[in-house]
Image (cartoon, rainbow, N blue to C red; front, top):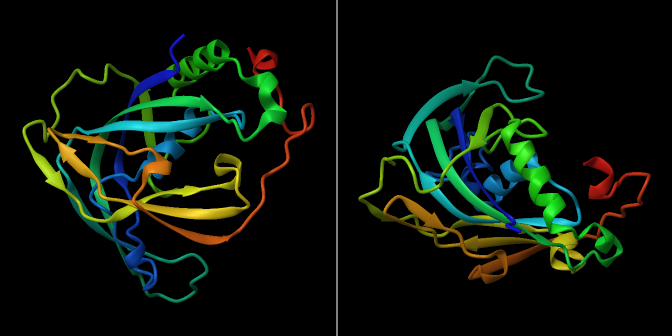
Length: 229
């Protein structure tokens, strides 16, 4: 049985924050979505701790446009506005697949590919199990199933390099190590498509801090796939 889904995600705005702009408080978006942000969208469609979603490929369907907005930071009681730079009118096609989380043998009873595939497909058709957003909570988005190779993208005849960018975070549940890792990569768009490298293949990474796996107890904060079919 297949373990892959393809979907369209679109929204009015997106903010894939460039880490360089976080320090000053006036955030600016990267030109393209990070694999971590798209993984988050996929997990909002359907996720369980017994599986890991891997983003394989992203198609940029609409032109890359920027839009500045004045935002009042949370907790700020003054009248000053921070200037955030968002992506405007975004649309992406995504291809992703799931793998069993081999670092969680305690959940091996839930390694049922057929069950997870059909649940994920139904969840996608319903628009996701949780709210969908692109990069940050105020950027609401929507998803629906799509044929990844159909449709005309804005950059189907263009290649582009984006330099060193943030890729994803490696959590203990996925890496099997008691630490949190941040990863970086060099994304390249070819004919409007960005093929995402696997997390463990990223050329650069940095240990952020020590961390431990979250504990799951069946019947308490976890249920097996068979129980939710």
